[in-house]
Image (cartoon, rainbow, N blue to C red; front, side, top):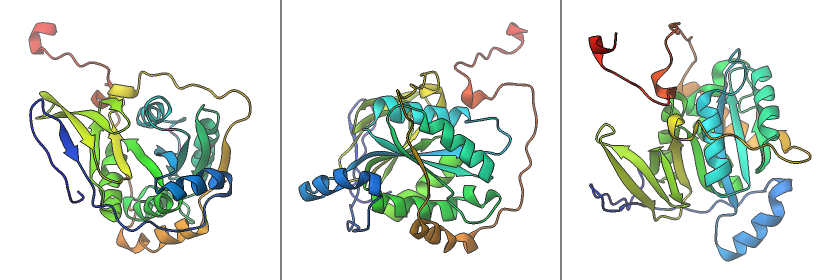
Length: 271
């Protein structure tokens, strides 16, 4: 977590700050250049939200965590937003990018975070470097991802690179800097206010935003582009830190509890 974090339990407001850091000066994406220049003069971050989603080969589209992340960005966070698609296959990445490009509020969809085929695009070590480089270029006020295994693996690494305290497991957006998240194993809710310079890093609960319908854009969709060479190179420099060996998943007919709207437990009394 970044420096300057202050937390108080109970009903009192919890403040989370960041120690800031040196503002990076880089060439901006051509489609976003106009808005960036005016905001740089005022000393504020320019882009609304950077939304990071996961797309797996054979999943048949965006999963519930990705949809919840997009719904939160679309309806509760500053716009416009840029979506970054991380995937283990080029086909899945392009399909997800095309689906996201049709949503309202999306300005650009970026994909191709790794120049290698396979699951390297999902490894947190190189991907966190790509995200940090994009944050330096786009200067978003908010960065959001899902509170699933993918997001929990990625967000702390991004927070460390940016020296900014993350706010995790968000279940409600009060305003652009105030959020509600569960504490004490879900037995209490804490209201958290971010008071640092940002960017504000969030992970959102699937059950809190997954039921919200995504709005489709009117007219032409957003631009779909590949991640820049500088960002890909930043990720490639960290690929030696980890290696994708394989994935073993247990198949079950039971629903996933982390994606269920409600869970009823009563033992034999309910049989």
